Length: 302
Image 1 (cartoon, rainbow, N blue to C red):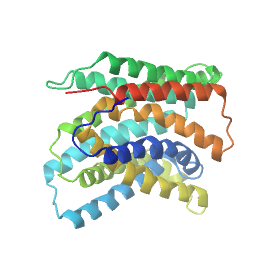
Image 2 (image 1 turned 30 degrees about the vertical axis):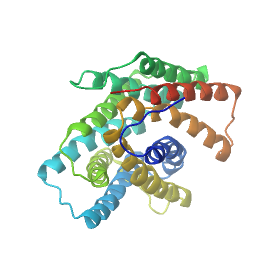
Image 3 (image 1 turned 30 degrees about the horizontal axis):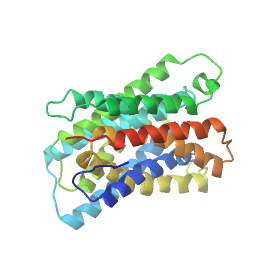
Image 4 (image 1 turned 135 degrees about the horizontal axis):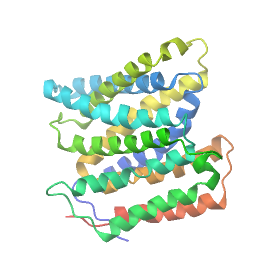
């Protein structure tokens, strides 16, 4: 099977996709451990503000590019859509909605991305191969889940499910908006600014919801702190920079395939590290999802 990419060298694309596939897939387990002793919104806000500040200082010193007011306004818009609207929705909803349904709803991100992008003038046309790959990817996530995981043995929380749908839409639309905004030339600088702005919004929401009174610095475990550090460096500084760059050099359909691969990586790491079961259903779902991703990645575009 020949994969046709135009522009950057294939090895750079491979590294970028590996970051959003495998590193982001590992963040599910890291977040699970981090929020054991750190309030959820404060944890997420601290993660993104710290990672954003690191990237911002590094790229400013390296390139000397000084962003203007229009750049900061765009970073606030995109950061709010991605990190408060997208990531924040997941963090909040996972307290009300079973993890299986959360994973399934997150798998709708590629649907939103290609649907919204297809409406843009001059966008690459949707091919039958891409559409089939997207549908097959959602089917793979459905196969991955045990029926009991969808509702957790109870009734569906409509509010939690609705927030997840809105969150998926916010992440997809924010990703597409970032492609068209006037941003700094350095992808790392743009990513840092977006994370800082989105992280500040998350911290404000955490403070407004009373999480400051729940924060116990002495009660934070070493595992939670180490996982937070991992989320900052690998899950944000490295992976989100790769995501921002990929959005600029690849198609939304290809980049959004991370939503299919991440749950597989999370399940495998849960088996290796947390002794969670690895069933034949998981192996079948992996085969279906890998096929779906291959169909989308290998689809030719203009």
